[in-house]
Length: 261
Ligand code: NI
Image 1 (cartoon, rainbow, N blue to C red):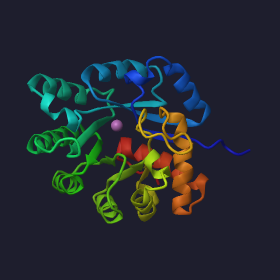
Image 2: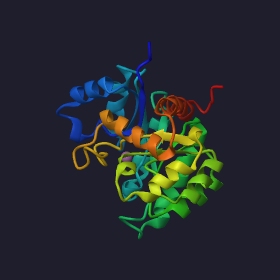
Image 3: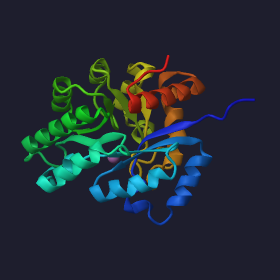
Image 4: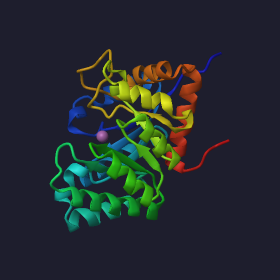
């Protein structure tokens, strides 16, 4: 008998306010869709602590990440930083993120963002955990920093060029693709997704944002991963089952830093 296909959501914000009212239904729909592994990304210390409790109930399915988002760089005073370091060391935290650079919303605090990004990478290295990298209108700076401060991790919601995609994989980073991949006008994301080796691919929702076609415009959730993975297989001209099993392996690699086989 065929084994049911299983999926990974490597970037979900289901502990955010948008899911408070119906979280258990969201979890059930993800399970029904075969989304067996979900990496929960939290953006505040209090959310991270809630995540520890939440993930503890189902550690097979959930892993947890926390990082200071570049949009919050100005809020990262000493207290926020000390708390971040404490949480990063906690064994219930699997990954550091999302961290990175965002010059789309703000460029005036560029130096502050860069400094915060580098300091968080250094902590990730210290605790031997992967980084989840957010980069918007800042791909060259992001790359330069990641080249100099070598760690392991994933480029979340990758939106750079295919050439740059290959450069990130040369540094050992994975690239995650989400709902944007299914949009008609996302030529660059499709080209990037097709350009890299299978061993560097991940799927993600970034929910509640970026719902894929055919549910574009609605609140996104982990149960939508199959739409994204189907598009990924089509863009790459690959067998969907082979791709699905590769992505499961890639996710394990992201979290452990060890390739099996
Ligand atoms: Ni996110």
